[in-house]
Structure formats: structure tokens, C-alpha cells
Image 1 (cartoon, one colour):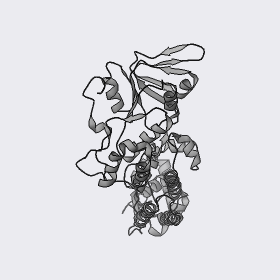
Image 2 (tube, rainbow, N blue to C red):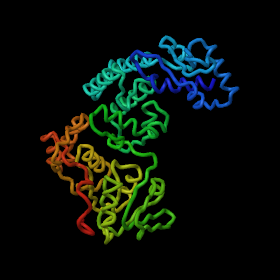
Image 3 (cartoon, rainbow, N blue to C red):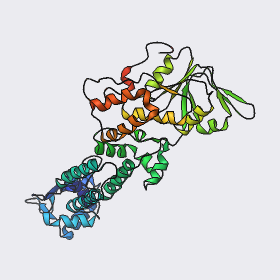
Image 4 (cartoon, rainbow, N blue to C red):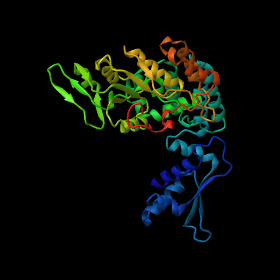
Length: 397
């Protein structure tokens, strides 16, 4: 019954997601319904009419004089459960009840790190779902998907991920298949944003993409145990994998310093373009991946390292992680708290992170900048992109 499948599709689009009772029966023009279902021959149309008459659940409105012509087909309110069951669906009120039960379960379970925020999230979902509304990315009409998303957001935010944890490894750790977290990254980040009230990326939690590599601009040579050398000097941009860095015995450069930059898409490219004298080795990195760790390990120990990152708590945490994985000092480059005009309130994640940053002696030289965030309860204008491109075509840019 192609015509009935089309009728159900239209009913589903119009009413399938409602949780409140409808006051009027659902009705469709019979001729247009047949056309939409691809039923055009007189024989097929006659068959469809016989099927509609025989089903016993629909009301057929016929032409006033030519009774053999059907004008409209109507689904009485009492027949809606029949239509839902016929196509293996679940009524909206049942989906709503199932979603509310999922929210109640997760509310009772609580959250080990952010209990207040978790309770607030569950309450906001309860109120919205009770009114038949969804709060993206959480939807009441897909209870099992809701359960999976709430569980993933909870586990992602409860764990303190070691910097550079691969997204696929984290996906397995929180009970998903290895590619699901990567495949639905925006959805999970949207869920974290709903929890924290501000944009939270998986990168800011310390997770790294699966393909570990480092992007560079400047003179660089890889030296291998068999005596071979791969010289990348003269290339505009170089992308080197962790595997190649692991194989080489050492890395040499004629540059006078290393400048790592958190923002790869904009700031790294601006500084690479300004690195006209190529006396700086410019690298894109946030949390140090395995590839970047190999690079730090195999570059000359005397090469000075400067890092240019965002100045929100997550940005300072990246600087801390860089200092943890390299024996050489890592100097903060252009990382100063600055007012953004309009306050940028701290997220619960920031509030939990700040005391740890302030207490860590490895950040003693920049403690005043971090303290400025805590004192003002304001991240300020923290994104490095807002500083714009460098003014000079070479160090100190």
C-alpha cells in the first residue's frame, strides 16, 4: 500500500512528534496523495480505493454526486494508534515518557566532578521534554540516542584526560566504538557546551586527533640512523608524521628559536607568512601530540622554545603541558590578559581548572596573568586570533 505509506509519512511529519492530544482528525486530499505515492494508472487507483475502503480505520469523503470518486481521506483521532502500530512506530507520549525516564536516571546518578552543573542540565532537559521541546543536541523523541549522548557527555567531562589522548582511544574508554566520538564530534561538543554553558571542544579536554603529525614552517633536517638526511628547508609548509620523527635519530635546524602556536588555521599561517628570514622554526601545536613530543625530544637541547597560545585557562593548561614534556624552558610569547570590552564569564570547567594552574610552580612566571582571570572572573579577550597578524617580517614579529 504505497498510498498508505505516503499517508503515514505526511502524518508523521505533521503530528508524529507531538505529545499533546490533537483536537482535529488528520485529513489529506485523495488525488494528491495518490500522485505523491506514484499511483497514476486507473487500475492502480481503483485498487487503492478498494484498499482504503477495506482497512476500516479511515473515513473516505466522496464526491457529492459521483459517489465513486474519493475526494479526501481522514484518519480519526481514535485510529492514530492503529496507524502508528501499522508502521512499527511509537506514540509521541510514549517517547516523551521514555526520555523523561532517561533524564531522571542520569540525574540520580549525579556527576563526580561537576554535580551542580549536571543537576542543572538534567533539570533543564526535564522541563523542556515535559513541554514537548528538545534542547539541542538532546532530543526527547529518540530516547536511546539521548541515553547514549548523556552517557558520553558525562564520561567525557568526568575524566581528566592526559594531554594528547587520542580521540579514538577516548571513544573506546567511554564505551563507544573507536570511531564514534570522532564521527559525532560536533554533537558531543554541543552536549558539553550545554553542560558548561560555553563552547567546549574535545581539544580543550586534552584529546587529540588520531593522525599524529606536526605542521612546521622553517629550516629543518631529519637525520636517520643509516646516515641519510631529509632536508625540508625551502618548503613553505611541512607536515611530518610521528612515525617519521620516531624513526629519525635527531632533528637539526639553522633556526635560532622554536615558536609553537596554538591556533593552526589562522595564527600559525600568519606567522609562517611573516617568517621571511626563516630564522624561526614555527610549529602548530595545542596539547603536545606524540609527533610534537618526538620533535621536542630530537631538536637540539639548546634551541630556545617560545609558545604563543590563548590566554583562557585551557590555553594556560596547554603551556603547562608543553613544559611538562620538554626539559628545555618554554617561554610564553605574547600571552597577556587583556580586556575584551564585554566580559567573558568563566565556565565551570575554567573554575575547576584555575586553582590547579595557580598552584603549579611550573607556571610561577605567568601566575599574575592567570590570577587576573580569577580576580576578574573574566577570561577577557583570550583568543590569539584577535591580536591579528604580526607587524614585523621576522622575530620578534
